[in-house]
Image 1: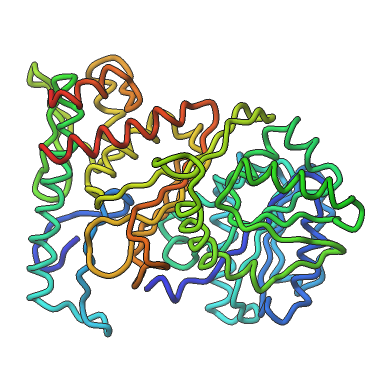
Image 2 (image 1 turned 180 degrees about the vertical axis):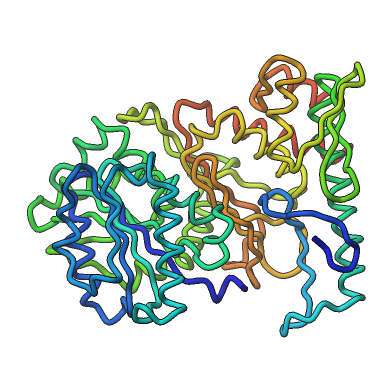
Length: 338
Length: 117
């Protein structure tokens, strides 16, 4: 089955009380949603959120016995397989998309890992977007105090800043600056009353790679690409940089370097996103990863702009990002003489 | 498994994906010429990947070699060998062999790479 035929999975994460369920309820009423199957994960003995989401009961799966990120991964895979089986057998109405709503304390990375690596699931489902809600009122405090909130934002493709009707413009701007410092690769959308720009949210896979190009072209850190300083958060000092390469990368040496880096420091590499010039015809190789999980690289048919340099956004926690960049250069230089 | 060669392999790990794509027909038919081209490219890729890994591994006296296009063999200087399925597994097995951790951010390793040793 080719990638185009796999069912998209929209993952909605976000800290406790940040508006995930409200956003999801609004999304389900949107014509953009299509026919949706929902997996709701709740922390605690009694699930509540799934009662708030109106949809066909048979298409709503509640994973109620624990947090999906740590103890329920096999149940998540089972739930996805079960939905697929029922869909194919006509037991439930056909659906075009799966939405997973995580608990407020979930690290979404293992959820992505389950979809990317489960031997059955990965052939039938693909991660469409990891959307994270961030409360405009309490978001800054959550980022400062809770590592879970930082990990969610760092892993996000899209961050929806919710409840903006309750916060003043200055606070919202400061919060957006804080989350951009954590994850410059994320698309940031405004949200209020459960509404946001769902069309942009669903097309984030395309638009945010343009953002990678913009970061690279934006300068700000001399010749070595764009960077933001390390900032102290609940999860430690988070820093990010767009590493640029003028010459084509040796893809095999890049694989050696990155597998070695992730083996040793994977839990502290919060996010990787890049357009790689590996000297191949056509467009760049797209690389995406969160912590230890790297999605299968894919070729774009064309470059998003005239810039042919490799651009890799790295978001790291408690790691010297200068050393990461120096290490990548050292491995690539060594490849030339090997 | 490749139905034409009878070789068992999986290319599940992202680092085992080639930089160049070679496609079969859109209808899924396996074209012999494409298959031969792809197998040759795949073996060349694996050989190149092992050579690149050796650039780092030689700092600890270890060597990596492709084994029949399906696995890699990691060896230490005393002749101890281990079969590893893909590049990502190499580092864990190498650490077990030498009894210490491998860090690509180790300044000593980067200096060695710079000197070509």
